[in-house]
Length: 501
Image (cartoon, rainbow, N blue to C red; front, side, top):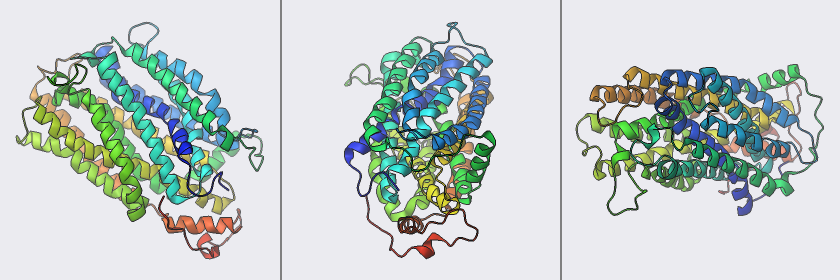
């Protein structure tokens, strides 16, 4: 049974969502700044940095399911998730500082960067997996879960966008500010404080609700049993379908985010655009996170009605195609020669108008995919008699991290393929280099978006399926691990609740 019933109070939505700020800070750092910092500012080869980050994610992805399993098996008077949220954020903050302030002051070795990146991601998982695993425990309502994810994504994006604004205007301001090492240490220090504060504050705010002794005491930890249950959970057909679509969506997101600074600086020349009527800190580049913020706010009002009208699978598919179209149109028009002068206010305004819509739909894809996992929890419980929120959400992180790492790796290879030199001046880069970057980025984006739309659109659990399953469980009809147990939709005698959030 869930901790709540009926509509969720606003205070709970805000407090639970606030914990995702740490994820947003991490995502902003890794996706937007880490590659350009280590390659352009510290002088490491972009292809090598992309490869190191991919390996770090693959190592971490192997550890994530174990963390999820341990979270599911934690048995304390504070519940299963809270102990993790109190222990992990402080060491995470210290390692995050090290990532942006290499001990030697110069670029570390590839092995040194790998070690720091792995530890950062493991500790971030120890915060995020237990936090997001609380969603199915807090409520079993189909639409209320979407509401919680809306607030998580809103908070995560606001945290990430805050770091972007500060990076562009305070820590690494001005023309070519991203291309020098000055300011990245302060960027890391501020981000570390924000990450630790958000996780701890969210945990304390939810303590009274979720600090409950679990109903069942789990058996002692066994590594073989852990891998057995993880393998069983990941064999769920619905999870495999989600994983196929989610993998493509996350690869596309990782590539888009990590290449955005290259595109914004070298293709669109946003860092050289200034506004006579605006404060000195507001430039074409510092406006970028503000535009993303507008897109996330629009998403907040779009995703609920889309899920209510289309359902989560169709919402994800439609949004993936829409994000593809609006995201690539500016580049098609630019290469066709029907675009305002690059670096002008007209160019930036038109580009940002496309970005608002493309990113809005891109975030809808991510929310839809994440929210689908909550429904797999009850399906798995129906089949096995066990709940495995941590395992499934760590599986989501496994997919996301592998895919994001692959996306960053692809960006590194695209930059290497284009032969963009380290420390290059955007004003002197040849057009052929930029065309190569745009063409490779467009081809990869098209393939990934179509693959994501195909598989996410085929996710097999509808709202009616989920609500029939919950009705059956509430009547005591959910079978345990019994051979040949009937489907919950046959057992249920209560009609689905179709109310919107």
